[in-house]
Structures are given as C-alpha cells and as structure tokens.
Amino acid sequence: MAWQNVSFLTDAASAEPLCDALIELGALSASIEDADAGTADEQPQFGEPGTPTTPGWQRSRVLALCESDTNVSELLQAACQQLGVPPIRDFSVTALAEQNWVQLTQAQFDPIQISGRLWIVPSWHESPDPSAINLVLDPGMAFGTGSHPTTRLCLEWLEKTVTPGCSVFDYGCGSGILAIAAGKLGAREVRGLDIDPQAVEAARANAERNAVMADFVDGSQPIDGMYDVVVANILSNPLRVLAPAICALVRPAGGQLALSGILREQADEIIAVYAPWIALTVADVGEDWVCLSGRKI
Image (cartoon, rainbow, N blue to C red):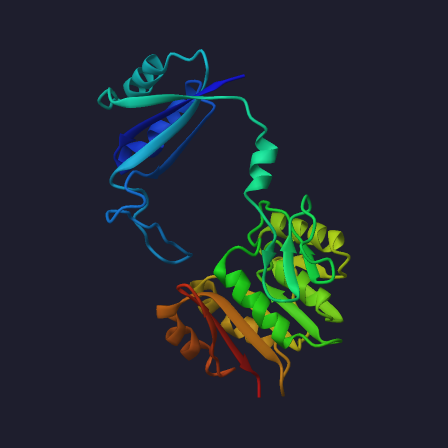
C-alpha cells in the first residue's frame, strides 16, 4: 500500500485546529512542526510545569498522511470550510511507499556507549562489548533511553558513585534506566518512583528484562526510608518544589544526591534551593545541561 504525504504552511492559531479537522475528515495522521527549523528564525519550544509558554510556531508546517486515493485538494478545502478559514491553495503532495516501519524505527537506535564499561543496548542489537555492563533498553513511552545529555550525565555520575551493597533511590524513574544501571553497578537495594503509571510499568518490565531486582512505585504510594544514593533526573521546577521530599530520602552522614534536568542558567538557583539540606556543586556539564551533586552532612 502507498500513502500520500501532504505538507502546507499556516499560522500558529490555525495549525492545531486544521490537524484535528483533517483527521476528522479522513487523514490517517497530522502533525505540526516549525517551518523555520534549522534556520536563524527557528523558534525552540521549551516548557516545564509552572512555566508559561506561548505554544506553536508563527510559521507552522502541517504534515498530513492520507490514503493513496484521497483527493487532497478536496480534503483541504473541506477542512478550511469546517473551520471558516481561507482555503489552502499552496500545498505539496509526495508519495510514500510501503516500508518495513519496524525495521526503519529500529535502525534509528544503535547501542550507546556511556563509558568504557557501560553501554545501553536495544534488545534487537548485539552488544558491541559483551564483557561490559550492558543495559538492555528499547525506546518506549517512558522517558529515558540514554540518548539525552541529562540521562548520560546521571549514568556517568552513578558509575562513579554506586558501590557494591549500597542503596539507591531514583526519583522520577521514567524508563527505569538509572535504577537499572545502579543495580547492575552493584547496588543492593534499588527503588524508583514516578507519577506516571505507564512509566512505572515500563520500569518494572525493563528491570525484569535486565535481571535487576528493583521496586518501582507511583506517586500515590508513601515513600519511606533513607538511601545511600539518590538521583533525580527531572526538570528544574519540580526539583524546586520537591527539594524537601528528595533531600529527606538521602541518608545523613554521607548520603549522596545528584540532580539533573537542569539548564546551565538554572544551576545557581537550584543550588540555593537545596542549600538548607545539602551543599550542591556542578558535577558535570553536557551541552546546555548540568548535573549537580552533593553529600549530606
């Protein structure tokens, strides 16, 4: 089977309603991207809880996927009439042939070397170094495949920090990658928490695949105990709000904490927020992101 890829430009206000209308009228999918991506006029879209943003791009490109026999001109005209917006006359259509989508998706994800002894390996790949510590992890719905600088920073920190027999808590576990790494690095007790039930299920499945004993819970369950090592790779706003709760999990007299998901310009503020409990410093930098760490006295 072949499909048609339809592309046209519109403004930020019209892009999402047009996508919805196109799907309602028969398009298989519709998405929006920055028409100026890769140029000096590109508009990055950043956002995190509690941070106001203006969503969308002034010059938006709508991409729609349609059946091969769809009359694209009529589809676009119907969508515009439904919304009461001017007709779209300038659009492009390209044919999209049948392909092995699973194979194409898998080809985008190769093993990632974190260090000399730590690799992240998708399940369909052979490990480049069978003698290394290999974390078997596939892309999925939960955040954390090792490709983002913040995940790499935390993995590198864990490799230096986790000692055999220690206890580790992963706050905001996502896919469970950090907790799983801690277990493979020798931690005796590993726990993780995430507010997303799908992330918790993904983390449990990933831990089982890696033969790591770890306990993952969602945010509705009480958290108790204190841990030798605590890591939180989330965003700066949640890190501010959760500072007392996160620090309460760090064992006194030597427990260690690492935080990431923090942009360079946010580091000083996060350090100040955590100062009443733990003195943090910049442990490492990756691109525009930092990893902060400190030891509880």
